Image (cartoon, one colour):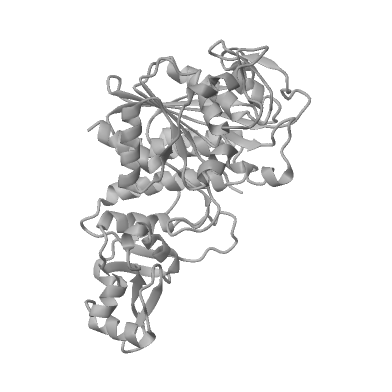
Length: 462
């Protein structure tokens, strides 16, 4: 398979104007009151169409050709703000436009775009798709950049590790940097041993060398934003090896890296007035004669010693060095994203990623951004009472507290030890995967929280 090329996706939108077919997005009330196109209404009544949420009814012309479509929004369209994503997958191939819809133009278009995503890289046959004309009152440029960021994250997660290992993830990172003329620095292999010892420790057993990727973009003096993403391209669990069922989706363990890269794309494409820095520690947690072991103790970049009580708790180790490195420049806002704990999924499920922060104002802003963008988030506490659980008898801290209680919180508390100079920090424990199809996603690799974060950052620098 050819290496992944950055920004290779065609747009799901068209600019054909009058040559497109009409879509009437309707609620049951529109059918009952007859407040839609008379021809479409007559066909809907003859077909017994009820405008149920996500339903599609194709409308013929008098000559028997395809003339348009009715798309059901259900009785309360606000319950599914991106229901038009389902439309992107249900329509037959062709060029379409929205004739009527009780939805905002931005939400309608973004929903369609999100739902249009297809991961067909490994399919021998690729089927054509429907395209939509963006309404004139929609912010087409911003919608397209949000889709580009989301699709980048989804693509990177969906590609299997044989084509998205440390070497390939670095290539994608370099492609992103080159596209936006950003500076890039990479430290790899044994060069990590002294300054990024935990990254080196976790990744040294892999045939592909561990590395730390760094991107810089923007202007000094602007708000300093630093993004850190966990880049574990595959996680066997190390010597504390995972069972087969738990290993099946471990290609997604670089979901944090994929998401911060998608967020960085949005920020750079919008030319936000920020001083942006992106740091991604990249490893494959493999098994070999030189793999790190349970019981080992290592000194981190920050100087804190860490006892390894489970080699499958490797993500927080590489993030520790990366966060220490990020924190040394005292950013105004430091965001880290990681597919870190199963405990977060047990608590909130796959669709609602938790975040942790000590900054109440930042937490409020993030929750407002979440509601405004319909990009779900939920704050969990950095409960100081659990600090005792990350203490170690023989080292400063342990990477795997015994007992398994409050695992998402203790992981966040572990990371907090490596952030001391930053003005505001938030840790996102994402899943990076949609287990099943949703209106705005066909399932698979998923971008989580980055549309809300982009909205917050954009608002903060205006």
